[in-house]
Image (cartoon, rainbow, N blue to C red; front, side, top):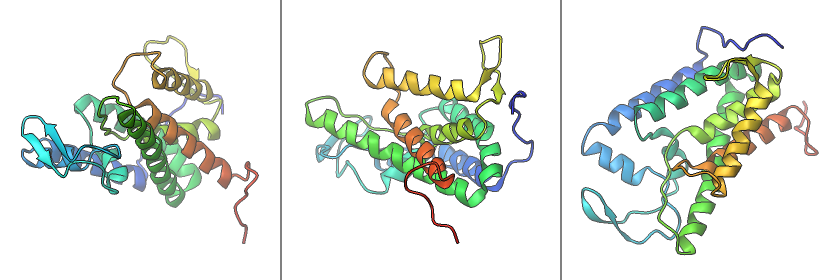
Length: 226
């Protein structure tokens, strides 16, 4: 597949439901005090968070910290309109063709697994940072799930080409995926300055890639056949 990458115009069901759900949660984030409870109790907090945390503008709040549901709910929260627009556009752009290629059931599994993989790695890193005396890091956003989908698209359609601003020439999906991973590795080890959850990206990307390759029979552990 060497032509320019063009996702189908019709949106498949899992992508459509994810777009709607993320949009509804983002609207809820704009309604005080609901926004406070969502951002405080649905964000991903590291293990070992102090029992009392100064949550601006409400002051010290009890019972703030990690809860198991946060490994999922944090993926439906976004910091601002640009954050959600970028993630949802990427989900539509890359996810349409992936869902049509592997089917809606497997796509939902891929996305969900990528979210969990992203949360697991980010949780481990943030918990380690807090335990070693670093700052308290909370995480939100669908980027981990999105990176799992990007990796799946790059594996399925490696030579498909995509125009990315500001580059004047199309970029093959395989090189785009490699570029994303390289930037996240550099950012994760502090070689670039940002507030991006780079390890969540890496966890989601690795999970999505491994799961897709497992389904394709490309790993030593192969799926059962009927």
